[in-house]
Image 1 (cartoon, protein in one colour):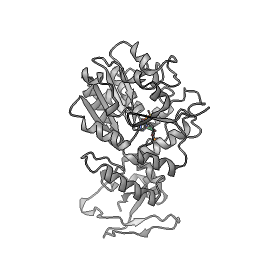
Image 2 (cartoon, helix red, strand yellow):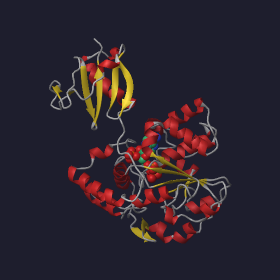
Image 3 (cartoon, rainbow, N blue to C red):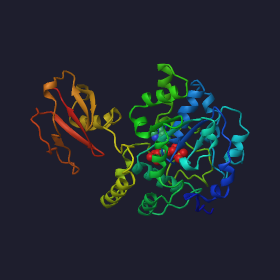
Image 4 (cartoon, protein in one colour):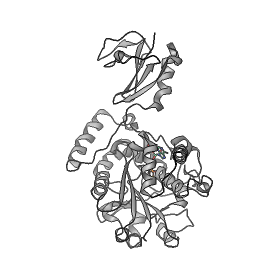
Length: 381
Ligand code: PPS
């Protein structure tokens, strides 16, 4: 199967079949009450689609399993081979009763103006550029309806120049950011959703004027957690033919993490990327986070290691700080807080060695490094 090429639409790189059908997309008629989920590709669209569908259904779990997510919330500009009734996104939407919830990856400047004429609500999700690029690279590898990405080095270069599907990441996130007060736009971040899904799901529910009870909120967060969505055929895209999406090359639900870019960027790539980023983002006050403090989710990892020598029962999470997840002894006294990293486990498998930032701390305190973050565990004696 031949992969599509990119063609420009008003200067934005677009999949050729979308570019050829552009007049159809451009003239799409939004209606009052339509809700739009807008993202740069791979920024958390599917995650938000599932959250929104659950909220709109009143957290009706069975109802949300009625069909795959791409049939429940239609991808507006998708005009290529279609899996939903074999019709183009706009055609399916035209026949849909209101109120509709719609997915798009369009940059602000290419949005059909009818969305603004009808004062439609938009949920926009941005993801930090480096993780976004990594995710898009792997998606392009496994998705035959996208151009061949080449090597990571080649893809990264194209990502930086904006010559990738749906154009420049930098323009996309900043243009939507600049418009967030002009229209009814809830601007969210993938990283915030990872950090505190309860808070972010609650914001989405309020924005949609469908506030949830505490129990419903918990239910939505649980059902839209990465492992649950990864294993749910209605959200993991496993229902599409493998000729198009080949999950054995890279699964659609790949890692769902913040900071995976560290496993891809070389030092030279990182430097070039950051320099370019600074220039392109110089004029905006938009700030994205490319890492999160160690979260309780990494606790098992820390505890596993800790358990090699220490007893699990003696520690518990205390507080997540900028540079680590702290474990504390049950009978903790604040005067014993560490001020830096004390000991670091060697890759060589040797015993801990004294690391930078040594602090006067009693024995029984160790540190574990994970993706550049430090967790400090201290043991009560
Ligand atoms: S698409 O094709 O543009 O609609 O893709 P999109 O859904 O925007 O992005 C896919 C990435 O989002 C991750 N994902 C999640 N992360 C955390 N939690 C949940 N529930 C979740 N659902 C999807 C998915 O794994 C892709 O990111 P990577 O980094 O590739 O894993």
